[in-house]
Amino acid sequence: MVEIVSRTAPRPAGRRPQELSVDGVTIARADIAREAQNHAASDPAAAWQAASHALVVRQLLLAEADRLGIAAVPEEDDEDRRETEEEAVIRALLEQEVKVPTADEATCRRYFARNPALFRTGDLYEVAHILIAADPADADARQAAREQADALLKALLSGAVAFETAARETSACPSREVGGSLGQIGKGQTVPEFEAALAAMAPGAIHPVPVETRYGFHIVRLAHRVEGRDLPFEMVREAIAGHLELSSWHAAMRQYVSLLIGRADIRGISMEGAQSPLVQ
Image 1 (cartoon, rainbow, N blue to C red):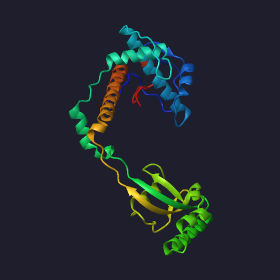
Image 2 (cartoon, helix red, strand yellow; image 1 turned 30 degrees about the horizontal axis):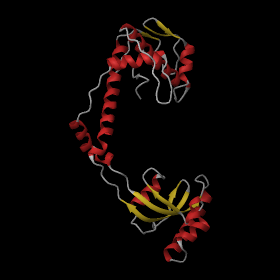
Image 3 (cartoon, one colour; image 1 turned 180 degrees about the vertical axis):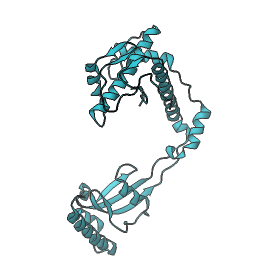
Image 4 (cartoon, helix red, strand yellow; image 1 turned 90 degrees about the vertical axis):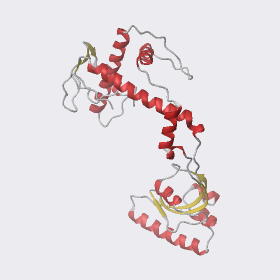
């Protein structure tokens, strides 16, 4: 990441600037307060600082566009949202000044070869479960649920009760209506503990111990596993190119903003570590 340096001396953390200005142009406190509503932060002071950084960068970009004589007509997107005049000018400035190379075939293939896990479909599991629910904050209920799940698992493994019957009569999950079946699920569709249990199971088996999650204790049966497969380069070529070009644009944008900050007279806040609000 390009280091961003301001000529402004750092202010003590947590303090709002008395007056914020960029090359003599004052940014009003009311504007900072409005902008702060757009910045999620751990506390109001952090939101104020993020808003100040964003407005400083915005002023730098508008001033640079004015210096270069850049004008633009606001555009509309596919949802009929129209740019403001300032947004259009900033867009035109960046289109002119921030250039990134097109990701060529060789670059895309190198990225594809170095990141094979990114280009593989996940495993799919056809699974059923029985949930014995318990509030994680209630130790007594948790212990009772554990004991109930242990007893039910033993009955299932011995063949004393059918899985579907036990699910309909016992499970706290809506899937009880279909014998506990969750259908086919993939990575990210359930909690990590449940996913880890599935990954370790053989198709046709019931997990040897109840699987504990924040919801309670699950008795898990894996019917089938469909192994993931590697995607061919041709299928992901455009996605890789888009990712690489976007990453390059972010880097170029940070450098461009850094240069503007470095030659500006910014008063009222340190811009060290600041980023463009257009780059997240």
